[in-house]
Length: 145
Image (cartoon, rainbow, N blue to C red):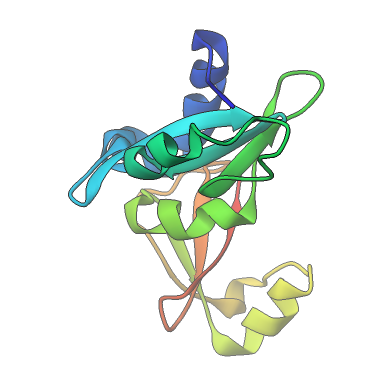
């Protein structure tokens, strides 16, 4: 397990910034402690400094995972967000879309959402912008770009 290089950090932060914008700093400096990003087997983990110090005693080949997996780097060095990052990104999302209960199940099975299935949309959401999709009960469901 190692820290991310400057290039890896830039690529990952650009992807996360599509969804949360300038709130990126709030992910690292949280009120309950300092968190950081670490790379292990091409996957980026979001981990507390306390847990990171404890995990230093475990050898890299024996370590399976640590913290929450935020995404992975592909072989072409692009970054893909995983669904496990949704709980951490959703509170800071700039653009949000709420789906009505009738369209929610269809959306989760992979179908498109009709205009009649939308409950609310954040103001000034531009086309092709990264959004977080919520149910009407404010439960984050998915991100879309």
